[in-house]
Image (cartoon, rainbow over all chains, first blue to last red; front, side, top):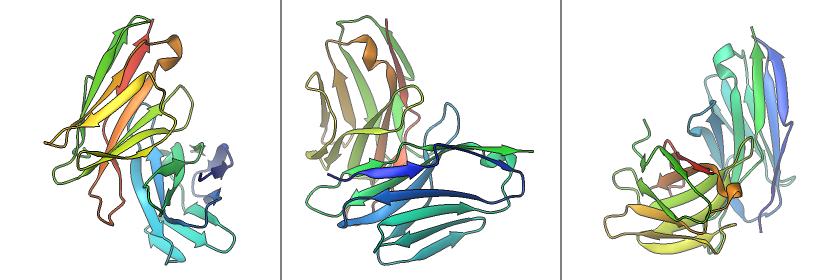
Length: 113
Length: 113
């Protein structure tokens, strides 16, 4: 089955700096890669996603890049703000006969004011 | 608010008991997913239903079962509960049919004593 590895597990940055979280996946048949943000005690919320036919996608301060050959994708947050502090999860969806979505272990991002 | 509802919000029960968690998907969404999140852990995929039929199974214990009803709401049944079953249980829904975005409910916090 699909295996998604995510790193780092924790990340501290100064407010205004950039943050990068990386994920690798194992199954080349995966075709959809969402990123979720989960604040303490709250539900995971989709913040950005990318499909396998696209190399990069941007939404304001957030961007995701995908390298299908290397089977890795990354989340980039620029000009970080304290409200960006949360746990971020990457995920990969297998495109085969079933629709299982496998999540990474999560990255706890702390933005220091 | 994602449009996905879950009841109850909190549940405290004893070991050996059985509980039922309920999820109502967003209007129009055909797929329902169940996840388990233990303390400081990632999201463990349990099971997925699409339009009433089971579509994918993850690391779901035999003591756990789920179903999706004709009105598309879903229930997760947990039986012979153990202390280790204490966790946050999330339901998510997605439209299906090529649209993979998952929207999470607020979760049910289960405490087994």
